[in-house]
Image 1: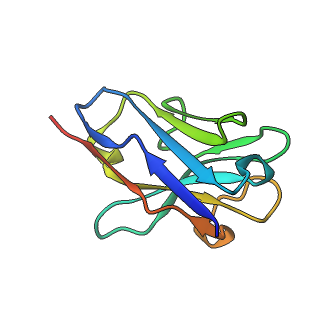
Image 2: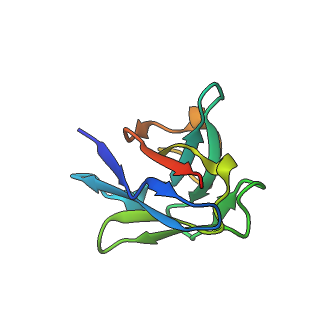
Length: 124
């Protein structure tokens, strides 16, 4: 059974940084595009960033461009989301997901396997 596990969330002050990790057991992440999504209370789940399986192409939402960086460590079978210059509006539950599509899918409906999420709270 595919199982994705996010970690690295927490409480951080505005302007701070966090690194989220998405790990998998019995599932090789580098075969799949991996996306990071977030959902704030009362809002729809939105795509934050994703990375392709083959050529390293990436996508970033406009709201996080220049602040967030997605990367893979295929040896550790982990995908990371480095989040810098965090803002209160970044507060949400962050999810990682794997897609069976090719390329850089950016919509939640294009993903097939999901983790349980990790809370990120940006507040002073």
